[in-house]
Length: 317
Ligand code: DPN
Ligand code: ZN
Image 1 (cartoon, rainbow, N blue to C red):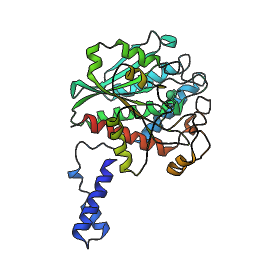
Image 2 (cartoon, helix red, strand yellow; image 1 turned 180 degrees about the horizontal axis):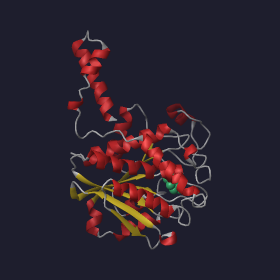
Image 3 (cartoon, rainbow, N blue to C red; image 1 turned 90 degrees about the horizontal axis):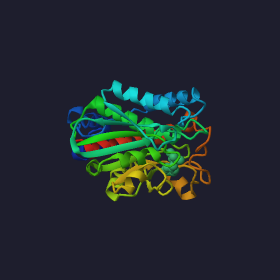
Image 4 (cartoon, helix red, strand yellow; image 1 turned 120 degrees about the vertical axis):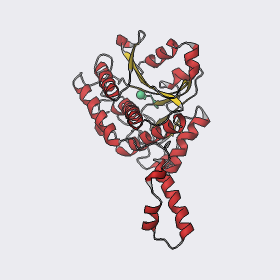
């Protein structure tokens, strides 16, 4: 929500310039929607993201309690696909022949902007067989779905192509994303300028971790978090453990967000972010209790808005 911080900056400037103006008057004068810049990201709806998470949980319940290849993975793909198609996306299913159960990756590209410069976003849509995988990784899946739907609805002027992926079979070794990357021609690989990964972005005892593989990409997310007064840390827990590794190995610049898995929050991190020191970021990681009750609003809201910020900043004009 960069718009808010701009409005606040505008308010400060106006108040300084006019001195005697009351804050209420200054505020209404400082918020003419007509001057809102086109490239500023809209709010990514938390309510809609929670709606997607509820659907993913229902899918798990109807398929043996999980969204793995032998459980609700295929139904999860159908859910995301149908939402994208209803928004006007052409969606591609890629059968991953090296994945457990030969499950499918789902790919959708917003068909505007320079086709030779692709910003790609991905999240794994499978869960472990122990549970429904709502934080891991319904959170990333639902958030990039809502960003995709928001992009289609608002239809901003695009500089780059934005391509979204929901990966099969991350949980047994990032096989879906690896299959995708290895299926690209070297020309198509070169077109992907940045890959952004979102895996576990709503942990109950959250931290704000930004992948630090590429400083210029990390800086975009940090710009957003700084604007809402949140301090971040580089991510180390997730290094090499999610789908960005498939892209990084191919020489593609990567970035992403995470709120922590089984690692334990330190006292210094508790001071920074609140929550419970000495406890895991997500004590339901890879367990049956990773349900919609395992996701608080705050990290989901802020991280999904951070994703929106990065997409608008990196890909719109
Ligand atoms: N999300 C974890 C998984 O899929 O098992 C891996 C991971 C852990 C990713 C910590 C990021 C941070
Ligand atoms: Zn995961």
